[in-house]
Image 1 (spheres, one colour):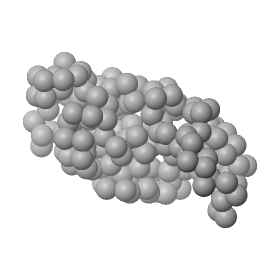
Image 2 (spheres, rainbow, N blue to C red):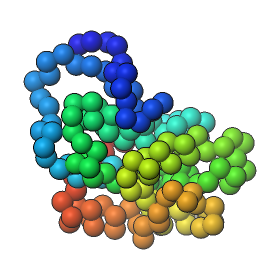
Image 3 (cartoon, helix red, strand yellow):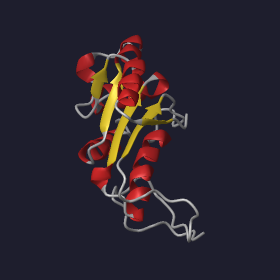
Length: 162
């Protein structure tokens, strides 16, 4: 294994990947991959980027470096549970945690990379967040359960690293 990070990342500043010499398992670069990331924890405690959102960037960077075209990566994210706060825009996040949302930049980049990002409406309301405080880069789902079922019905595979 080469311990040097791959320099040509599709998503800059996030999702660092490492070059693996002669891996025994690779993705077929001509296949369309549909993935929904189920993100319900946030071990960053509100102070740093949620490492699970960073994993989404790593998934994209790793497979783009291997030759999988971005248009062959259909990716969605559902935020719920402790990760719900990641969906807040900067001002309301700052009111709660005294810093701007550390996930804002990555969420904007992911959206611009055609990743669909949803927050669970049930978790959002249970957290007593105001709908107007949601980031413009995040869509509202009825629930995480709804999003997971809908995306699975459309052929998406769940990735859950919580």
